Length: 194
Image (cartoon, rainbow, N blue to C red; front, side, top):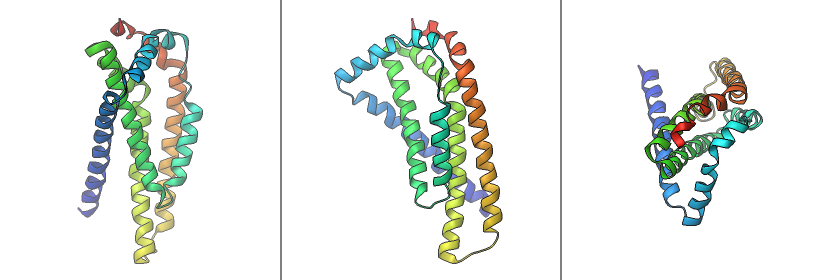
């Protein structure tokens, strides 16, 4: 029962962070100066040709980011940085949705949601998973440091490391999908931006 309660607290905290991040991203877009908004509109005007003529090359960026987050998850001071990065990614989602809405109205929001589903969803889910695991690691490390608990620390950290490794493998497979297939799928929905 106690474990279930802890899980729910962590889950509610992460979901709240995601929602606040998305709302902040939407607000941040509308706080932009007119010149910045014009530059965004100009970039979005070319989005169709960008999607048709290029691939999403995120594998190096995602690998570097995830490896850094994995190392940070094993340090207590790294936990705020992991949470901040999740908040940043969610802020970018909110900014993206607001940008497409301002440029293409409701159809733009639909396209933005499709884009997020295809190009961001698995990565964000893995980030949430890493945040959850990192919270568990931080809690255990604090208990060891403050309460001098030694029980099964090695086993727990090893099991959590294996789970983080699985998240890394999922992201690599996902990035290969992004490179070879994401823009091809998105090109079917470009009619929404006309």
